Every structure is written in C-alpha cells, then in structure tokens.
Image (cartoon, rainbow over all chains, first blue to last red):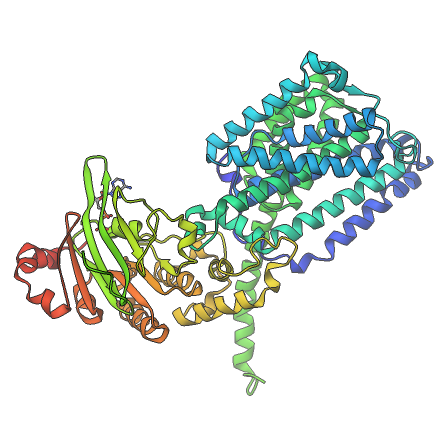
Length: 361
Length: 259
Ligand SMILES: Nc1ncnc2c1ncn2[C@@H]1O[C@H](COP(=O)(O)OP(=O)(O)O)[C@@H](O)[C@H]1O
Ligand SMILES: [Mg+2]
C-alpha cells in the first residue's frame, strides 16, 4: 500500500519524447463516435455509438476527478479521505443553481468555481494544521459533514434530502440524451483543458514546490518555502478541479444524489489514481478508464457482486503493479533504455576506437 | 550586559533546550564574528546539532535568545531563515530523494525569487534559477551529475549536494553540521578545501561542526568547545590546543573516538 503511493524516480522529468502521443489520442477520441458508427453500421447518435459515447463521457468526468486527486496525493503528498466533498459540492451547487436560481450555465459554472475556492480554502486552512493520517481523518470528517448535510430533511426543499436533486434543467443544446454527441465533445474538451491546466501547474514553480513538499517538507521550509501556503494552493486547485468534475457529472446525470458526497466516491478517486500511477496525471486518467470499463464489464458478467471482484482485482494490482499502469511502464521503459544503452555503448565505443580520426569534430 | 558589537553576526544569549529532563543545550552564549570560520567541537551528544537546530529555527529554545546582527530571531518561522541569509546543512543527509540533483538545487534558488506562486509559468523557463543552480553545482563539482536522481547518489556526492543546496540560496551565514560525516577519508580534503574556498570567495560566515580535529585546527579562526550542553572553552586553535581543561576533559578522549 505504501509503496504504491510513492511516485517513481523521475516520473515528472522526462516527457518530451512522447509529446506527439497526446494529440494522437485526442484525435482518436474525436473520431471514436464516427469509427464506431462505421463499424456498427448504426447512425452516430443512436444505438451502440451512442451507448459508448456515454461510457466515455463518464470516463472523461472521472478522469478529471482522479487527476484532481493526484494533484493532492501524487504531487503534494497530501492524503485526503474527503475528496468527494469537492466533487459532490460541485454537483450539488450545479443542481441547486440550475433548478432554483434561473442562472445561465456560464454563471453557474463561475459560481461553482467560487464555491469550490471558498470551500477548499476554509477546509484547507483548518485541516492542513495537521499532517498524514490526522489530515486524512480531518478531511474525512468534513466530507461526512457534507454527506449528512445533503441528506438533512430540513433542507429537502433545496437539496432533495436523501433522494437528492432530480430533473436538473440543462440547456437543450447540451442535453446528454438528445445531444449525446455534443455532450461527448464538450466532455472531451473539458478533460483536455483540465489536463493541460494540471500539467502546466505541476511543471510551474509552485508545482515543483509541491513535489518538494511531498519529498521532504521540513527541508522545503529550510530552503525558504512557507509550505502551508503551497499546500493550501494545492488543496484549492485540486478542490476546484474536483468541483468542475462534479459540475459535469450533474449535467451528465441530470441529478445530484448524496452518493456523490459519499466515502465511496473518494475511494474511487483513490483507486483510479493508484491503478493508473500516482504522481503522473496521465495515470489517473487511464485508471478512470480502466475502472469505468472494468466496472461495466464486471457488472454485466457478475451482476451486483462486481464491487467484490473489483476489490480483489485492486488487491492484485497493488501487489503486482505497485506503481500503477503509467508508473510501471515508466520503470520498465527505463530498464529497457538502460538495457539498450548497455548493448549499444560497447558497440559504439568499439567503433570509435577502430576508426582513426573519428574522435571528435 | 555588553552591547552586541557590529562585527557579531550570530549571537546566542543563554539558549537552553530541554528534552524532557535532558538539558541538551544548557545556557549557551555564543558570539560568532562576521566572516569567521567558527567551529563547534565536542563529543557525541554534547548538544552541537541541537544548538544548530536552535540557531536555524528548527527548534524553539526552552529559554534564551538567538540574534542575527543584533536582531532577535528567536521563534521566527523556519521558512523565513533562508530569506534572512541563514543556510543550514544536515549531519544526516536531508535532500529531496526522488528529484534530480539539478532540481534539488534549483528549488533552493527559486525559493528566494518572486515566482514561487506563478502557477501559470513553466519552471524550466525561469533561466536565472537554473543558472544559479548550475553555478552551485559547478562549485561543489556535481555539474556532471545534474540529471541524476538525488536518492541514488553515492554518499560523498550527497554531502556535496547538501552544500550545493545551501549555496544556491546564497546565504550570509552557513551552518554546516559535520559536512564530511560518513565520507570516505580520501574525499574529505577536497570537501574541506571547498568549504574554505566558499568562505573566502563569498565572504561568508561559516559555523562548522566537525569531528576531525586536524581539519578543525587547520581551518578555524575560532573554536568553541561544547560538553554536556555547555560551553567548556572558546578561543583560537592554538588556545584550544593549549587549554588544559579542554585537553584534560577530553581532547584525549576525542582522539580515541571513532564514531
Ligand atoms: N529531538 C530530540 N529529542 C530528544 N532528545 C534529543 C533530541 N535531539 C537530541 N537529543 C539529545 O540531546 C543530546 C544532544 O544531542 P545532539 O545535539 O544531537 O548532540 P551532538 O550533535 O553534539 O552529537 C543527546 O543526548 C541527544 O540524545
Ligand atoms: Mg550532531
């Protein structure tokens, strides 16, 4: 368990060689509905193509949620057991405002960001006073507070209590049922933008400080960083990103129910991050895909027992792929590189020695 | 009570640190002259590292004060120390193990700049921090290993990295806690020469804790001897070498000690 939360050597240093991979994946995802339409012979907005668009939309939303968790756990070394509160608050704020305020979608989006900033700063200021397991417990307590609050019968008129909010009105152009393809592209664009922002942040000066805090917080302080401020920044960025995923989730499901605030929701973020590879950003996105697709398949095959099966799979993954998909791949790749280097170096030095005058120019 | 002379850069007034019943540092009043190489010696457990922890803000004294250029800095948050010109290395290597050597040092340079919260900028684009880090790495002779992950460096290189991290912060006062600890003996002279060079070239004050008596006698302007949390004696190397109580109390014991 502890090994899997430890990012591998140089996980965020060498990426330049694969810069073409991202655009190709995005192009494939853009083409995906049409490819499926061709393969299945069904129109792009019906049947199989439509179904699988829905599947991927959920992956995109979960991917952003998992990525936001990775900013905290993977990059800053903050273990939170309450991440659902940001996702859930984003979903609820979206539902409540769309249902009761009459605001447009853009205004609601801004409000969700505002709510998330206030929420994460307040919770960060309180819970970042402690570290490690105590911090995890503090965040869990806060999250449970929201979970209970959402089900409070006194607030039924606003939150729908234990039933949650249903029939959230979404603009016609973005209706997830009638305009599935549009929603698909919006969700894809959303994920890509969130990834680019997250990538920018982790490669920025404060992003490096976040990693330094994960590595050795006392040393980061000694060289001059007020680590509390950076941790608060990480919590806030992560909280806003999770809330935006919750916003998309509410638009997609047209509802917001208490389970978006539950511990299971947090655990899903944790699982997706660990399955994919902690501290890699791409890993949690892949983890979201694995989690969603595997969950679908297991559900279809084993029925309601599927969470048990995924639990077993998770344990096996932690035992045999402790660095997650991306982390393990990076390690293997380094091993392969080292192997090639061992093979090639003697050959090359041998050649240079044999060729007179080939020393340098 | 004597005035702090302008030449004093670091002063402790009666600093004391208790750990439960143990007085690890017990009423130490120390004056360190600006630009000096001031060594602190004493057997294991004498309280040297604890004194460093008090001066560098790692620990708050149970009582007493720490002054920097006459200004009371007792209780100042740890992260302010680097900004006030105090750099500190650790007896037990204390780096960012999963980051590269370059990144370890670059972070120390960046800490003193103004871009620390600029989350929209690429860290690599901030050339001046990279350049400062390159200079520091060159100074300690680690420039060829800039891309190596710090955690896998050989021990001697980790000790150099400790130094480079401090140098990148360009402090006025360097607190070096046994910088040669655990190093292979043939590597020690070059590190000691490096420390001497850093001090003269950069006009810095160095407070050094060092076990090796011949190094201490050669390099120091002034030596303070600690014993059981207290200052036993202070003087220049000749005075310390000639000091009977120091000799009797423990210089002999020192030479026998191998830890
Ligand atoms: N954090 C601590 N908690 C309890 N005791 C400590 C702590 N740090 C140091 N000590 C004790 O204080 C005494 C002085 O230790 P230290 O300052 O490390 O000595 P030195 O660096 O001179 O070898 C030792 O007896 C040590 O065990
Ligand atoms: Mg010590």
